Image (cartoon, rainbow, N blue to C red; front, side, top):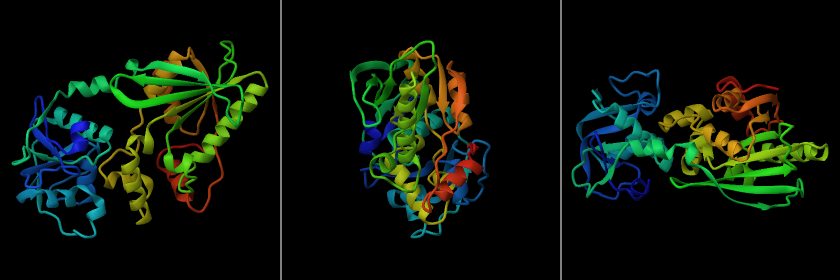
Length: 341
């Protein structure tokens, strides 16, 4: 991740050298081929491309002339589409290292950069070695452990404890806020809340994250007042797992008329990339096996149950919309399968 964010090439075991298009610092770098996602290729209507069953699978493309960084960035970044409307022609080529390419795309997502690479570029500098197997280790939720915990009275409830979780392979530090007194005989009211700087801190009206967070804490405080308890899991997975910068890129595309799913696809990124097994591991470390889950997203229920957490009840968590987030909430309902109650 450090290499990709610095714009250095990486040498993948079992594959070629890849240079991240967005961050590359080797100005004279160039290549005959590029690696992008199928979703990005489809939105560009590239010649010889078909929308695949797995829209975030990697695609190897070749142009009539070598890609320099300017041309590659025009292919990778939808913010440049209007300034560069005529791209191609391109040809899709056989990808003999598909597993390695998928690992590279996943690493780009984790690093928060656009999933686009120059392949075996000239003049790119010394490559950093990378074993794709390391990415699987990075995603292993069992590496997560409790780092520390402390009493934390909050506005919603003075009887609260914050628990911090850390993994040796991940710089993100997730936290849980335990509201009330834990009681093994009663399943806690639980909310999985993914980090949202714009909604939680800045009061953005483009989403419902801030109000959802406040409402969840209020519901848990009410449960605690009635002898129950609650657990808020605050997951460091901004933008449904695509990162803050890419989320803001998606916002810009939404201002052009695309819905939230279409915007992510134009970026070549998944519309849902959160790691729910991490939440299950956090609950396991807290000794919680059975919960009442506050959500309108059936995928959260299924993911937690698949990871061994028993969801005794799904508690609806619906809030009113506003003129700025009405389309966003409708998209979650109509295209992402979220429930109304």
